[in-house]
Length: 315
Image 1 (cartoon, rainbow, N blue to C red):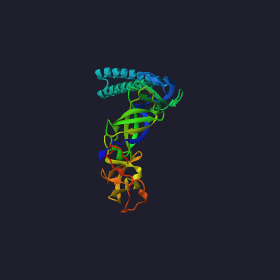
Image 2 (image 1 turned 30 degrees about the vertical axis):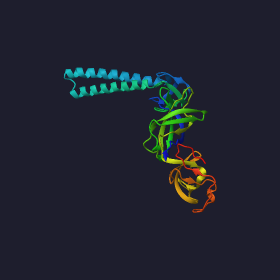
Image 3 (image 1 turned 90 degrees about the horizontal axis):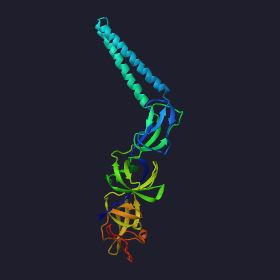
Image 4 (image 1 turned 45 degrees about the vertical axis):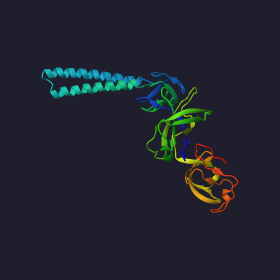
């Protein structure tokens, strides 16, 4: 018996490795949106900005409050030096001045992030708001994907499959958008915890796009090729007389008698991969197997010989 690199068949959805939701730090009215969905953007490019009337007014208000706090502190300090004001008055004035300075920093920070700029080279995947729309702080305005990073397909595998997969394993991907094109890929991340709802593990496949234009959200079918799987023997499906789950039955020929044998199976495309219950070189019944009884004598006209999976089973 030999190991066979049985592909793991799965499906998933394409995305940029880095996708972020971009929003404003503060709420307000969107004054301008400078990009459209699908548009490629250079890092630092302006994507959108709020109407700054209120925000700039708050910034100026914070600056004026700080200037007043500075004057108050200087006046109290002079009075303290003349022994007119107490140390407590001086400390209160200093605290008020420092707090006013922090308010200026906050106002300037909010002013800076009242515009949205591209964090990296990328593409606007979705535009979630329009000009003149009122948005709240943190409300997503764009879904942005980096073009500096790789394209990845997120797939989900069962516990039975996840134990066979390793980082770097080769894979191939076919998108519904390009049904006749096979894209090479490889495993780059493997989830270590099962999803609470599906019980499956997330695996990330990095795709090589070649000269093809890809877009986030493409539906994909994927085959992952682990380095090995269970050792098994490959036979036609017709040898089985019954199956339930991963257990099956078939007839082997001992001399001129058919003997019913229980085997452990793994399905591969149109064939059966038998992992336990048979040995290379044994004879199995294909034609007429459903009509036999255990221990019944048979006349052999054609015989299937069991070969290791590196060879082709035949008559």
